[in-house]
Length: 400
Ligand SMILES: Cc1cc2nc3c(=O)[nH]c(=O)nc-3n(C[C@H](O)[C@H](O)[C@H](O)COP(=O)(O)OP(=O)(O)OC[C@H]3O[C@@H](n4cnc5c(N)ncnc54)[C@H](O)[C@@H]3O)c2cc1C
Image (cartoon, rainbow, N blue to C red):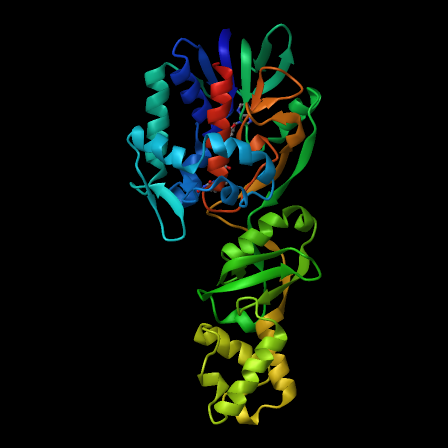
């Protein structure tokens, strides 16, 4: 079967590319080949079923800071198509987005189905063919591209690979001469069994977290869960540290609960409390804007009893409390999937891609977009933004 454009992978990047390409060139024959029975599966389950489409960050440079892999490469592409364009793209086609307090953007309907319906309606309107149960098994380059499924062969002048983190496709791309950075999971939460947080699930507070002994440090709300710790501070650490942590089940993290204040500074502030409020009981008077129960737990961890007054505390207790607040060490004994969003770090080596066109530098007319590339982001809608930006620019280049 002869086509102008074959898109391998019926996910976010595949659909976005197909629709934009068909709009740019209404005469182009475009087919999407999808391995599964259904298309857009990840979009369906994304963001807890609500689809966190993008993020309300409108400065390209700031936006790139959310990509542990791809930060440098996405800067240029974001100048051409980024969050504001995404919002407009969806709104123009009848799916307005709304901003939540933390910047995440969802369809106003609160349902990923709106995105799926939009994509399916658009592909129908534009005459894009969608073939499911078509796992691409081989890709060969002749005068044109040849793409083989178990059922048929296609030829096309241009192909886009948008197969996400599929290892079989990575192998095919390797056979075509590309370098593949091995895939490891990103975006996970930490399993921690520790007396200090055992009775505090649901408590959230801003914190700074680092892997003990390492340089990597992240900041943001930290959420104590039934099994350990989650929330943006932890998820960011899991993303930026994805490769470093990939083969480590047990490691220690250091938590600063007080906006990065150093131990000495905290100690001085505790001394002031001792001098000026000696009769008060630390246990009952939470400091540093910490949630009361967390404060109490850290006070207890510093061997300070409920009855003790500030004036009663000795230097060791004060130092211990300052240490708990500035650099509490927690033993992590495993990682759990963050159910709302997860990605794989790894994929096609970024040096081998022309990011003006999302085209392979090794093969002309071979385009790549989405998670197939060694690009991934922290949670918040940034992973889809990568798929939209790549899809938009690839579509433009394919239809020039
Ligand atoms: C549970 C969950 C929730 C998420 N929530 C969010 C969120 O709210 N916001 C956000 O920004 N990101 C979210 N993500 C991440 C986001 O879904 C991905 O980054 C994004 O889907 C990547 O798009 P893609 O098109 O590159 O790959 P995918 O969406 O994975 O699509 C790839 C498609 O290619 C098909 N395929 C693979 N191999 C072949 C083959 N050989 N032949 C034919 N077809 C093939 C696959 O079946 C699949 O349909 C979430 C991820 C998960 C797992």
